[in-house]
Structure formats: C-alpha cells, structure tokens
Length: 164
Image 1: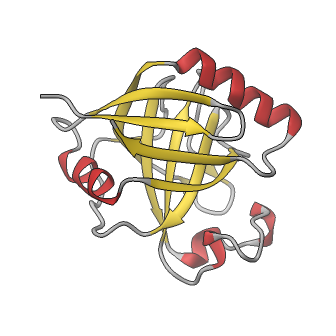
Image 2: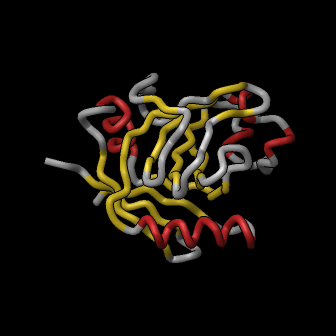
C-alpha cells in the first residue's frame, strides 16, 4: 500500500501530494516518514534551477545514498544531508539563526518543479540527492508558487512536509 505526504508552501497556500517511493528508496522513506511533520524556512535554489527546499535538523537516522540523481525531473522530491562546513559559507546567504549555522548535520528536503535541473555546487561539485517521492497531484500549483518565490522573494515562507 502506497504512503503519501503533503508538501505545502504555507504563506502562499499552495500544496501538493507526493507518493513515497518505498520500493526505490526504503531507508530514506522510512527516515523521512518517521520524522514527519517537518517544516522549515523555504528557499529557492540558487544553483540547481527549478528547486524549492527547506533546511531542517537531522532526522532520527541517516539513510545514506539511495536512488540518487544529479538531474532531478519535475515532480521529484529529494533528500540531502549536509555537514555544517558544507553549507555554512556566506555565499549561500543563510541567516545566522538558520539550520545551516546550527553546527549540526542539516537535512535538505527539496521539491523539483521544472525541467533541466542539475545538482552542481560551485564549492563541492556534483551533489547527488536521494529521490524518495514523486508528486502525483498539485505540481502545477506548486510550480506557480515556486516561481512566485523566485520573482518576489522567500522571506517569511515555510515549506512543510506532513503525512497524509
């Protein structure tokens, strides 16, 4: 039986439904599912292209690499884990109070809403993400809200993941 999560941009009132890919990423799905609900400040990717994401404290377990990609497609939902030194550079623009500056491992849960994404970072090179879910409903509305974030800014927006 499939499991689903809702992903929402709270301020903009947009949400979508994603099916967990338990068959392709069982460890990642279990780690995320067990940690839900989770919410964090929303960002629009600076490098990847058509990505919105939130940085959050580490989950209860680190699933390691599983079902990785560096070229996510529209509707992919990915998991990344970063050590503090990997994302704390001033160039990333995270506020001092953000999870990026916690001194602990940080989880990045990301949603990809358009084509031609490439997960590359000027400091690190390729950054594979674990694809753990696929959006089955509401992608167009999330894409519109994500584009609004890009054009009008991310301040005050949060990205929430919860079980359905």
